[in-house]
Length: 118
Image 1 (cartoon, rainbow, N blue to C red):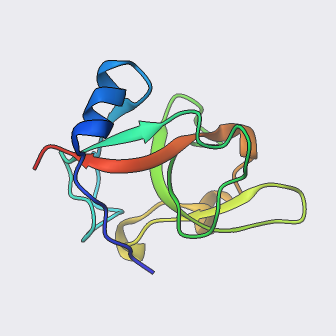
Image 2: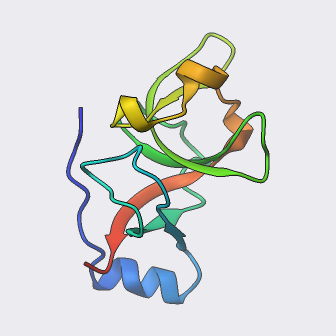
């Protein structure tokens, strides 16, 4: 289920300069081998205004039990209640929905669009 993440091209870079993308730095091993610690990604904070997250999307979300903590995880599925099951690509190193349960839709802050740099 790991899909490649494209490098940020000129369009994504321009959207970042125009503040239509946000930058996020990866800090853990939960998304290895796709994303390593210190990798930076660009995030579209408006991606889910008109359509919900889809399985396979990589998202930034607030931790449901520690709201100041931001997570980068992959959407696995949604629930009947409109919450989402999120999981890291590296299950041995990931604290995700297997530990804290489904994540409310309002906790999803945006969709990762590309890798920044590298």
